[in-house]
Amino acid sequence: MYEDIFKALNDNNIRYMVVGGVAVLLHGFLRATADLDIMVSFDDDNIKAFTDTFKNLGYKPRVPVSLDDFASANNREKWKKEKGMLVFSLYNSLKPQDIVDIFVDEPIPFDEAYDRRELIYAGETSISLISVADLIRLKKIAGRAQDLEDIRALNELRNNSAAE
Image 1 (cartoon, rainbow, N blue to C red):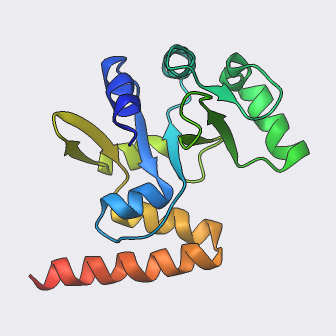
Image 2: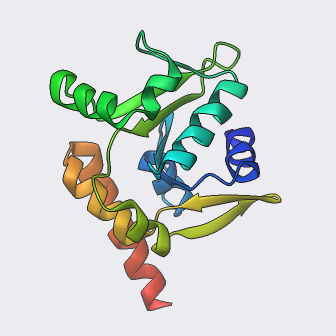
């Protein structure tokens, strides 16, 4: 469903990881999810390439700001403090079912998690996927009912693969 996004992220050498419900699915637990959650490296070159890529794909913010505003660390910090924003949501009017949420900060250190990520493939397209352990860390931080269910499922998957 998001293969065009993954291909564009890879083609533009963007450091990202899939997190959230899609990551739970990609790790092997079937569950419903409506959006793609992503963590990106906030270094200047990476975030600029990220915003340019999503503009080229036709994505726009769901809030009344420009996509370029997301590249500013000051803006992200302000949105987090003043609005309680945890993710920056993007939509594409040509693909209304494709919602992309990008973390506005690093709930866990990006570089460390990126070093532990897994690369999986959809056809010939690689997908940078957060590790199970780091996904569980993120889910514990969020702590919603769905996150707690995801943690249970991810631990079960981890225990089953360790037993094999």
